[in-house]
Image 1 (cartoon, one colour):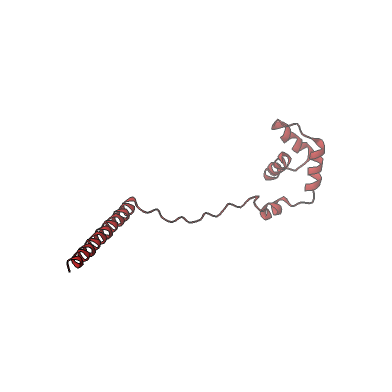
Image 2: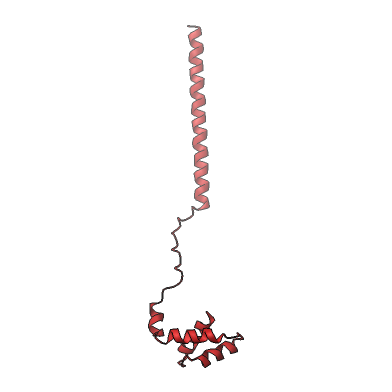
Amino acid sequence: MEYVYAALLLHNSGKEITEDSVSAIMEAAGVDADKGKIKGLISALSDVNIDEAMTQAQPAYAPAPVAPQAPAAAPEAEKAGKEETKKETKEETKEEAEKAEGEGMEGLASLFG
């Protein structure tokens, strides 16, 4: 890959991409250049229009779309909802107790009929 980067650097600088110029960049980067790889690169690039290839290049990855998140409920709204649920539960329990008590009294009254 570093050979391709060297070729792109030369291209973007307006320099000719040759074996010597690629070798010079590799040496400047502190990489031991493989002459065979450089020759192969030069040969492969001889029929390529680099500008056109760069405009048609697709990214190696596509960023994942971000799913919209539902807004978080405000803590006050959550607290109010919990308090309302508690209040409803207490009211239901109170109503059930009164109803049971009333039914119990009716049952007692029937004994003394």
